[in-house]
Figure 1: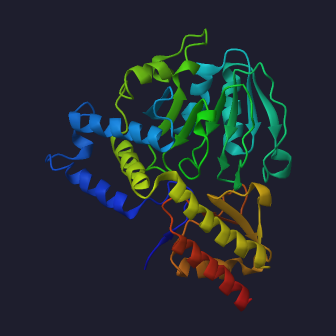
Figure 2: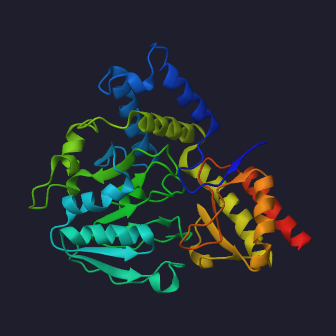
Figure 3: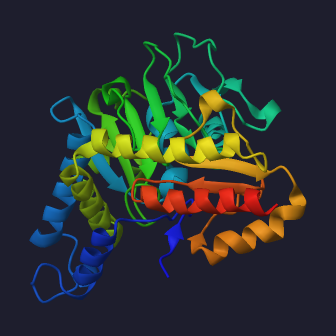
Length: 354
């Protein structure tokens, strides 16, 4: 039976990427050695790292624009204090749209004056605050572009002269944006790029070197840039899979091509949620995520029936986050439109049987 993987992360990856990655674990490009047993400083892996960094900048349209791409460890969670170490001198502003932005604010507050500019917590983070004030004296503005737990996504980013930092862990490479409007982007790999274990950081070099504090070397972006992501041993396998996934995306037409598919997937499932009286969406319609559709049953007595139906159909990873409940269909880049169609058919079938 085909499995339709709606897991929120680690998530589905392209089948051809999985096949190539599996082969490389046994023998990388015919060298007779496994990807995971060669030196990270070997010419074979240095080429992998260089390609992975190059592809990230190319796909985002940032080549030759003063940005550097890094693949570091510690997940997006390590970036919460790391970006503050590197950027927070006087005051930083945070838009609080969910669990991860709350955590980012908490970690930055340990190092300095990090303030909450606006929050949607009072309504269970089911919308994105808009038209909030952004002080001109901020060292940076921190945003979270997509909120996996609550199923919200920033559709229009604020215009400001303040440097903009964005956690794009769950929607990077999924839609067209003017990425040059961001001064630093970070994203855990395990949503749209690869397995857990590495984090992509895209940073404008002229943003760095302005804080007066001493920064531990392992947390210093400038150190990692100078060492081309090789200051310490990188997560070799996740970086390799990221390279394969970004090449897969480039080959299919890049972000414009995948955005078109993602829009079709989102339209299909949200149409069913809105038209089927047995379901209701969690996030405000104007802020609905194209990556994570969150919804609940209007009649909880149907839960066991619905659960049995979607599991029988080969659907995996549909349960909502424990803090929200209900269901969450994560539709990252590698999930097919056909898989979303299977879920919609089950939802429609439930209505017919109820």
